[in-house]
Figure 1 (tube, rainbow over the protein chains, first blue to last red):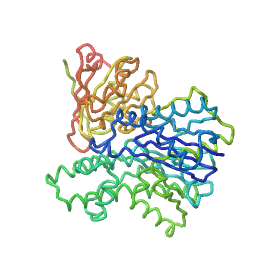
Figure 2 (figure 1 turned 90 degrees about the vertical axis):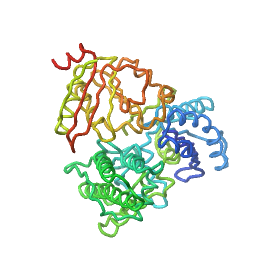
Figure 3 (figure 1 turned 45 degrees about the vertical axis):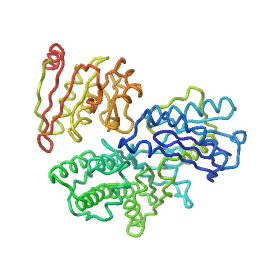
Figure 4 (figure 1 turned 180 degrees about the vertical axis):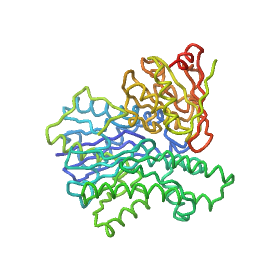
Length: 330
Length: 149
């Protein structure tokens, strides 16, 4: 079954063609350069850019897969959660194309896409597995018992981990998105230089990163002037705190649920330190860790297509009333 | 413009002030929040949500999505303009519809919003780790309701 996947949930326009779970193409057109100068995403710019990019990106995905729209048997489109104006572009495109070309289409939750990105790697986890989704908009831990069978074990009560990265990077005067800058500088710094809080929220698998962000802000303000060395130490210490919490929570969830397969997804899953520490669990704890390649961890349409593949194969369909939703639980 | 001041010694107390405000909110009201990073804006909105019979765990940072809709006794539109670059973008994201809508719009980083009147404006100041000084301004009639509530 040839599936066209589309994702316009945030600042990337993406389209992919999948045959089964084989990726024939996965095109991502990033808007990072456009948003960089604002230190964040400008929603109106994002949706306008999606409108300009959607056809070229879809055409490129079809070309790279050496297929045409006539060959496509199903369209999977992300309809939330995300920026409403951005989501609408993808959803309207998929509905119009599906309707006009008589191709069945289905709305896919962005988070289901992230969860199933583990299924796109060379090695795939068997069910059940735990999936930690960490990005600018989400920090959630899921138990996955099968396709379409997800249970949220915990999630952030305030800021997402990636959001904490972006906000800390902004207050340190680093660039956007914050993750890669902090990750890089952290390699030069001492992670034990400052003891930032590690919010474990005992007895729950929820996360909280708002207090950590505030602690970094207070610390930076108390220093007055911050030189390059201090910035590196602050980055390392902040990153150590975030990664400690993510690792510890994932490990205790795996123990409680007696699950030995763990996967990682979302933009923060591209973080070197997090990947390294996750891999450490393999030897130390006997847990198998599945780290999809970085380009499949960040937003991409292949993950939407794989989720769509399973749903469409089961006969699920969306109709023309499909709408985009900024908040959409998985 | 009149003002009420609260001294909160804990996160719990900040949520409680939000809840007190939430109890007197009516459809069509707009609440503007002002306060630095980490001042407790999202925490305060958890209290408003509680008063509107919305699960406060549903309220998380809206920086990423900019506008998050929640449905309780009345619709609650949680708006976060942190990532908005300038005034021009504010209206192009369709914010007017929320501010003029039938629900209650609560706006974080409201300093980025010019030319709109709020029913209540809430100023959060950091005084200690969990201590906050919260000032709420509004019309004397509506503030009286808050005092009596």
